[in-house]
Image 1: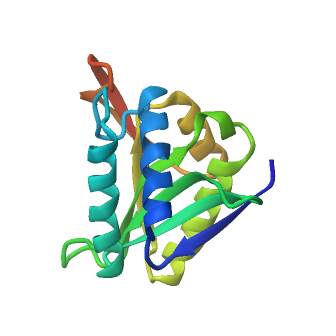
Image 2: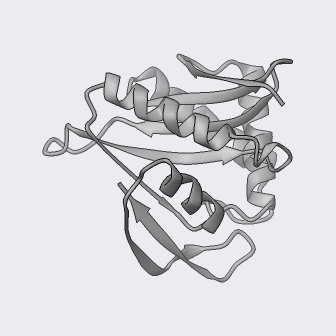
Image 3: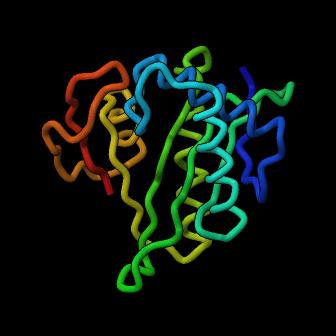
Length: 168
């Protein structure tokens, strides 16, 4: 599968719908990204509309991975808005790759693009966390430093506590 990574300045209605379906697919596949099962389309859409507002206010960047037919198969966010004493830092958030598009380099490409875009925004420190061992390998291969794990940090989408691992 060929794909391109690009930043978006605003999310239009078709993109909001596609990103909502991407989020639902990832949560249904077990991604611990802040949502529980079942994830209603309306809740996913509300989430992306809130992200769109934050994007337009300059609080974050959104990168998407699109196939050559324009289908969104991945996304990641760079949360730029941080406390006053942390202007050099950003959070990487919601690294999502559609289950049918995994193991094709999309997450690694999103990660590289996010690092570049964050650096262009003057961010010298990026922080992320993940509960997914496969994602941990992507971050480690990308040169990220594993900082430690927090037991029972969140819930899996179907319930039950999960640990999370932080990376810099």
